[in-house]
Amino acid sequence: MIQLENVTFAYDERPILKNVSFSIDETESVVIMGPSGSGKSTILRLIMGLECPQEGKILVDDANICVMNERQKQEVRKRIAMVFQEGALFDSLTVGENVGFYQIEHTRMSRSEIEQNVRQMLGFVGLRADEIIDVLPDQLSGGMRRRVAIGRALLSTNPRVMLYDEPTTGLDPEATEMVLELINKATVERNISTVVVTHQIPDAIALANRFIVIHGGEMVFDGDLDALRVCDEPRVRDFLQPFRESIGKVNQRQFV
Ligand SMILES: Nc1ncnc2c1ncn2[C@@H]1O[C@H](COP(=O)(O)OP(=O)(O)O)[C@@H](O)[C@H]1O
Ligand SMILES: [Mg+2]
Image (tube, rainbow, N blue to C red):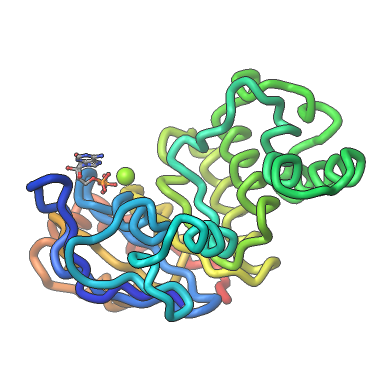
């Protein structure tokens, strides 16, 4: 459903991604990991059609997003929702207005219908609607803001694919655990395909059964946890070295 074919991308003259190819099937979950600055967020921006590669193609449901006009891209973005790093909530809107944003702006649903959907979604992401629906985002903890952002993305267009950029970065262990559980719950219960970008390796392991490692703009690994554990490509080993122990210990959850 998402395919990158020999994608090469540069900002101005600065090469960022080199000849990256992979594909993600319907209902497959994948973690893209790699050091900071390796080009992970850029990959998500390319999949959303926010940037276009200089070489190669990006296909979403077999259509090349790189040659689409803005209206066609908007249609693709209904199928793929992105949770940006730090959540990117609208600071001046309440939690309820954030979560219901798409339905308020782009549908003719009544206010009460939207509020009902928002309350249901807040419940889904594990928050008490009565307590926070009228609160501004800066009144919430970091973990709660992430959950609101995930709820907003899920409620927007009922996407089939969720892209998460560093969903646990900056959270304490307890909030991290709740966000990881929520991502898994969204994947399984809503039967969607999940792509997570992260440099938090232990968290990454808990989120998928397929891993892609990006290093210096190149894809240096694509495979499952067992293959990752024994991979002897030097750039993969260097990157994973500090986390060897946690990779050995961690139990994978149950995935689709
Ligand atoms: N808008 C931009 N203009 C120029 N360079 C950028 C821009 N966005 C990111 N970069 C650079 O591209 C590289 C890859 O960035 P990014 O994809 O954000 O990496 P990651 O998400 O893996 O940390 C970094 O060196 C970053 O500085
Ligand atoms: Mg990034």
